[in-house]
Length: 264
Image (cartoon, rainbow, N blue to C red):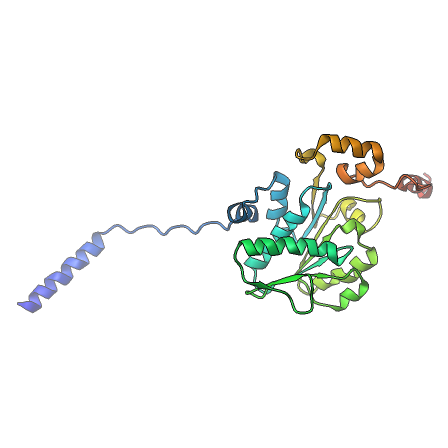
C-alpha cells in the first residue's frame, strides 16, 4: 500500500512539473556606461561633452577644451572606473610637473574614498593609488628618464600642450607592448608640438572631442570680458580653444607657412 502511494505521489509531481509554465530567462543587463556609474555612485552629473569623454571606448582619445571645463575631474573619474572594472591595469599620468599630475590622482583618490574602496600608495610613487584588484594609477616625472620605467595599459597626458615633445615621444612607447590606450587632454597653446599636430591631423584612430567656454554657462561672463581685454591672444587660447602664437612673436605660423609653400 505504501509503495503504491509513493508511486501515485511521484506521478502527480511529474504531471505538475510538466504542466507548469517555463519562465523565460531574464536577459542580462547591458553594461553600465561610465557616465551612468559616475552619476549613480558619485552624484557627478556630466555635461553632454563630459559624458562623451567618459563613455568613449576609443583607444586614442584627445580632448581640446577650455580652462575650468572640468577635465581633471572627468578624466579622474574615467581613470578610476577603468582601474575598478579591469584588474591589474597600470595607468600612468604624465604632465608638465608631478604636482599637476598629482592633482588628478588626488581627485581619483577622493572618489575612491567616497566609494569606500581599500586603497594604498604604489610602492616608490609619491603621487599614486593602488586598488585591491591590482590596478594602479601613478604619476611619472616630466623627463626622458621616465621611459625606463613601467609598461602602461593607459597613458594619460594632462595639459599636453605644455608637455615637451621629446618627453612625450619617450614615454608613449610604454603602451606599445600592451596595445594600451593614450588619452591626451589640454587647453591649446601655440600652434606647434605633438598635441597641436595630433589635433590637426586626419588620423582617424584619434577620437577628438572639442569644447569651448560656450559649453560652460557657469563661468562668469564679466570675468571672461575682463580676461579678453587684458590679453586677447591668451583669452583665445584659454577659452576659445584656438592654437594662437603669442603676441610678442615676430612671425606667425601662417606667415612661415606662406613663405615656405612651393610656388605653383
